[in-house]
Structure formats: structure tokens, C-alpha cells
Length: 263
Image 1 (cartoon, rainbow, N blue to C red):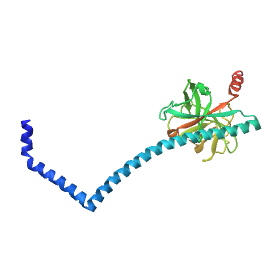
Image 2: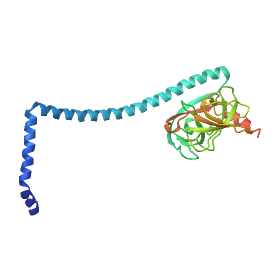
Image 3: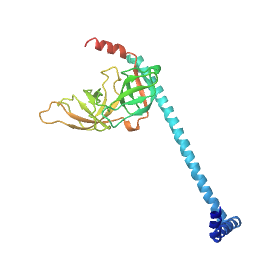
Image 4: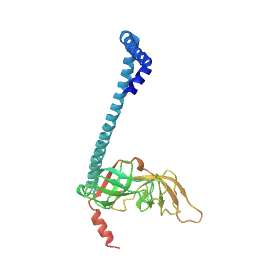
């Protein structure tokens, strides 16, 4: 206590000066239009900044809600189209929307987890796509969640074809860049050009024909080789993936059983 009193006495002149300065500032602010307006302007700027931050936060959650609504509307529209196709040519595909809750993009064996599972009709082996193109194939299924093997996994193999001439090939990933994959089994007699569109072949029950996969980035044919080395830029941007659509084929199990019966 004595120490505190000594400090106060030692700095008493300075403390009195501070008190008088604060009092003078308040008197000027209250009785002068300019300082008062300046203070109000500063306060208004702070309030405006706070309101802007609040609006940004509200906008973020509103945007997320809009994205979810758009995903549901896309599914509804796609299912209507599939119903019309089914009536015309017997196709049996249906789509279910899901949200990506976990994902890796920088490993050799990448995976992604979606928030739909067995209770939602998801089954192992079903294809997964989004609005951009092919994403992957369902590998394991739980009651509420499922794990998807994406294109950017070295164990992935997707049956594809060139949109320009229906030539079939296989898409694989070399584990280097999640933006690109390699197209194999393309014979040297084919004419391959940068910009060629690659789509799903429809030769398996996993995906219907015609889903975008990617664009030929470059091709290389060494003299004497029988097959091209083709680099494909993938349509799906995996680092930005949020919503997907699970492809459900009502005839998939039957087709797979018939195929296995011939092994």
C-alpha cells in the first residue's frame, strides 16, 4: 500500500495532466461540431465494418444453402431425363445426391467419403460423378457413409472412349498430378489431337455412356511403339469438390453376375 502511494505521489503531476487532457477533449467534442462529427464518423465506420463482416458471414451460410438446393435440383432434373431415357431405350440409371465430408488429393491412394450409405440405397461398385464429370466408384459402404475410390487413385480404372469416333480406351492415374490422368490402350493407327473429348464408354454397368471425363492435353507416339502415351486433363477439379451424384443402375447386379459367370 505504501509503495502504491509513493508511486502516485511521484507521478501525481503527470496523472493530473492526463485527467485534464481527457476532460478538455470531452468538452471540445461535446461543444464543437467538427470533432463531434469526426467521432460519429469514426463510430459509424466501425459499425459499418462490423455489419459488413456480419453480412459476409450470413452470405456464406446462405451460399452454402443455395449450393445444397442447386445440387438437389440438378439431381431432380437428371433423374427426370433418365426416366425419359429409360422409357425410350430401356436405360435404368438413377441419381442420388451426396456431400463430400472427407477427401485426400495428394496421395497415391486417394479417397473421398460421402454422407450417404446403405440406408440411402448406396452400394459398392456404383459410379460417382458431379456436374463437371466423372469422380470415381464407390468402394466401401457403411450405414450412413460411403468411401469412394476417385479417378486420382492409382488403383482406379475407368472405361472411356473418344467422343469423336467412339474408340474405346482405359483411363488410369500415375499418382503425380491430381489434374491429369493417362489414357491407355490407344493404338498407333488412331489420330489423336490435343482437345479431343474423352467420355465414359457405357461398356460397364457403372456409368452410362457420355459422361464427360476430360480433354486430351498431349499425346506421344514413339517410333516403333504400338500404343500412344496420352495425357488427359480431368474435368473434375478434385480440390474444389463438395457435392457429388451417385449413379444407381437398377440392372447393375444382374449385369455383373452375368459377367462373373463367364470368368
